[in-house]
Length: 409
Ligand SMILES: *Cc1c(COP(=O)(O)O)cnc(C)c1O
Picture: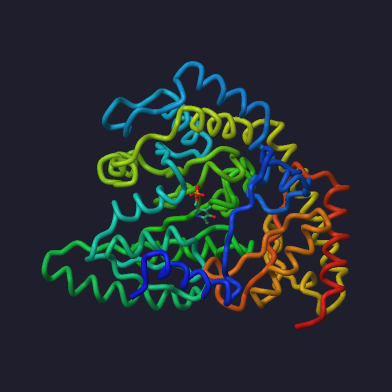
């Protein structure tokens, strides 16, 4: 029989053989447009810090002031030792920003999804999720014990079929006086493909069938809509979505997660969301930095950062349009998001290309199974307002040289 470590070592060898082994790369600088790895300065095209707020003076000052006034730690769960003012200030700022009656913050987006879906659903209910939703939504759906139905990516016909089926199922359950619910969950901008969900159509379907809709705006908050509230705002449905979810760790520049919606929703989560109830509150510094991020996004400076980000996205899109036919760069997906996947396919090959880009001073991560499907490995290029046009041009030149010099698979 194998010892504990032998058992684990065998699994790690297996991962290596499949090109799926992962390891941490230590960064000796702040997260920003340039990062320091192994003494080498790399241009960073890997982060979700779309507006360059993670290292912004306004957020750092807010975090430092919160540490001074409220300390480094948070003591316990907010229901146990009292709920620190920075969390309330953040939630007021979030509700005002998103235009919802209430908001609740969590220690991460992952915890927000887990806590919320499990608080709202049980084994009598049905949950529909897009095939490409984030792992936290899949995990939450499983943990909730609701009937999980995965629909093909953005496949509205499949959504309608499942909603009809759920309606029949609920009708027969109603005879036994069991109340059952149906929840549709989608991302607004998909994290690994950068494309958009058909929010308007999903909204119409959920209205038609009396389902609820939860939209994960992780990659759209701060970036889309006139007030940069997200894609639900841009689509004009925000006020009618039951559950708006997002993270404080991407464009908002800090860390944590949030849910925005009705007062009843937030009160229900305070009572029932286990990842909220049974977990120590985020540190005051994180909440204060996130609140500063929310204020920044709404300011003129936030608008200016967005303009710079979209100018960078436009530069990469124009370059892709010119790319040699058949080059992975030329593949057109995910039109306007700050996430640009460069499809490679083979896991080991994607890793090798990411390695060659690092040698050129460019950090674009290879994304592999299980983050994406097997055989769909890609370089996931993300842009930030913090990149200068010259840095974007330097990255594109390096990308061209690596993509064009590598033999076709
Ligand atoms: C990053 C992400 C999350 C998780 O948020 P964290 O704050 O990082 O835990 C949830 N959903 C999507 C789509 C994400 O990309």
